[in-house]
Length: 441
Image (cartoon, rainbow, N blue to C red; front, side, top):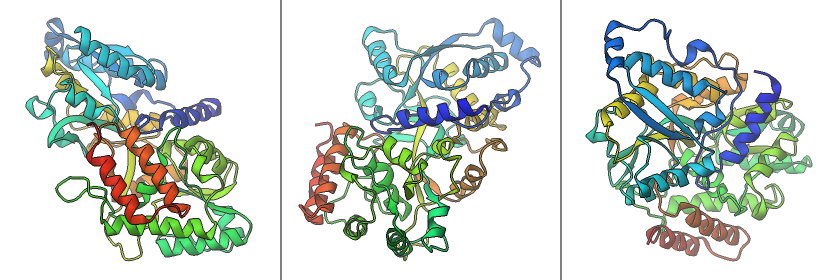
């Protein structure tokens, strides 16, 4: 891929990966290959030709087409049509306009059949009755590693996952006498102290509230890596008297008190945090894997986030997704389900070619269990991190939370007060419980 597009898509990532002020897809670093998004459309079986004669047309409302290379998404739709006889009409709008298009369509009866869904919209759309329970139609959910649920009903399936690793400036580590990338909280603390002593900022924590996603991507991203959760085993939010969450907060408080966090924490936004890391101004940051395009001039690594010292299990990895659902008013749910199955499993439900092609094109990881993306043109760091990603699992407990942006803003404000010594940890966690219990009420 040309460098200009490589950098352009990295910048797009910073604007779009605001997660629950935009849980959206991210830019990439590879040129699409004709073979990566499906097979040869010239080889159409007689059965497919028969279907084509009487096929239906379904509409797909999404922002993906505007972020993919021109014509790429249409090519996938053409391959779906060749394989099934059903046609997909693309309705493409910027991410910021897609929610409006879906809600307006639900109001005036013009809603599309297949919908691209942001995690921040999930709860609202379920409450509005917009989405179909996918277990009631023939979506092959066993092809997916992850499915989004509300009240244990399956409404949305991700196609691509945009994971959040910890980036490490290896030159700063070397100059600071840090011999290896930290893998535990104690090692992180020790490394940060050495980095500060050498005259560098250690770790960037963005707690600005224009896009209040640092509470999710960085703070809870660190917690999820160690199995620390906002919810209990029954899936209910439980932050009050949560000793594990308290230990996570206390770890960050120690880093704050040591003065090793990047300056301006309380106003720092994700874009600033990432650009400062790209400029070589700090040793560690946590950001989307798709932002690697911005770090090409650095000697860097992408690693899983350090875990609590005694933690030995798989790590949870914070993520955003390109995900899809079916509108409840869709008149051709069989064809809509078949299209989602095509995105996940390719032409035969086994090759995962559509998902693989999208993943390699967008610097993302496939949610399809059968996809094998070609990352040969991606940075070595991306390829290495994909191996770590496959060993672990994705998690984002804010997906499906009503009024997620407002809740995250309130949680962020309290965390800043706690770190600055104006609130104790128990009061903060009690406040969080109230925000989460009353979300959407």
